[in-house]
Image 1 (tube, rainbow, N blue to C red):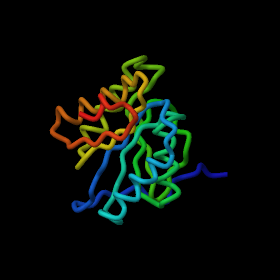
Image 2 (cartoon, rainbow, N blue to C red; image 1 turned 45 degrees about the vertical axis):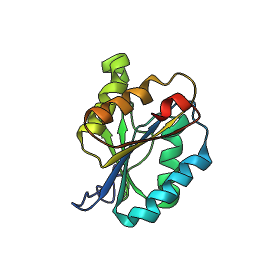
Image 3 (cartoon, helix red, strand yellow; image 1 turned 120 degrees about the horizontal axis):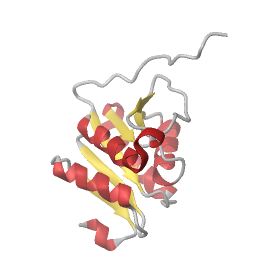
Image 4 (tube, helix red, strand yellow; image 1 turned 90 degrees about the horizontal axis):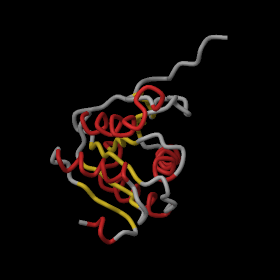
Length: 158
């Protein structure tokens, strides 16, 4: 049996509106994630392209699920072997490796998402410690990418 191959790579057009989405591993706010997608789809329609991470739980998992449910094009930046198969609206970028890079894998992956370019970042931040999300927010701000934080931590709203 031939090895499975994607239908097509995600094609980025010049007028696409690229949003990085990230969030805490403890994030459980499905409604907030879908509400943000509703807002973005209403505003940008088919021009919307999401970049996100590959954590198996929390915000990354919910973001991936919403992209699939709502048929939004998305690119998942991985620090582990991909869990999902690519298709015409979904592509995987293996940006780092937990085995090779250790604790640096997450920041390397986040930097790759940022360096690929984006029009904005939406972070779903839980009130608990969230070093990866805070790091992604800092990387985006450092690059001049506008940041929106959705979360339960009032201190994170600034």
